[in-house]
Amino acid sequence: QVQLVESGGGSVQAGGSLRLSCAASGYTYSSLYMGWFRHAPGKEREGVAAIDTDGVTSYTYSVKDRFTISKDNAKNTLYLQMNSLRPEDTAMYYCAADRVVVEDELSAYEYNWWGQGTQVTVSS
Image (cartoon, rainbow, N blue to C red; front, side, top):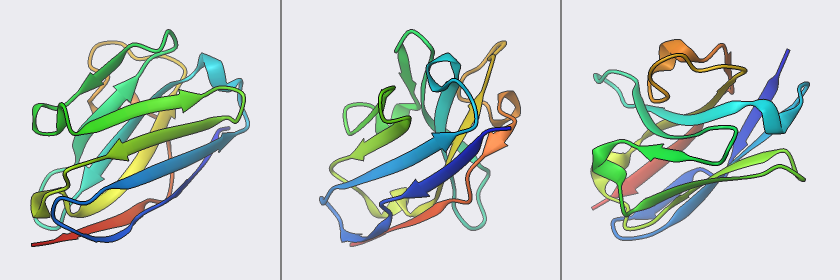
């Protein structure tokens, strides 16, 4: 069983930056596929960024060149650096993990372990 705890959310003005963190425990961290997802009221849950066990990353189109996913295996921590934030980035952000991803690393169906979420609010 993997435990995931997010932190780093908050309120920021458009154009600002935030860094989310996700501390993991309960599994060999370097063997996990991990991703960041977000869920805004009235919208579907969306895969934002993902990183595989080799460090290969993928992003949804709307955050490319603005967000960066990374992980520190020594600290068992996943990060999401978010720059040039926009009001449409406002959502609850969740980190997720699993031992294997079959098809789509940005699909929530691929992940069995989830954190509780951290709120990001961007004002215009």
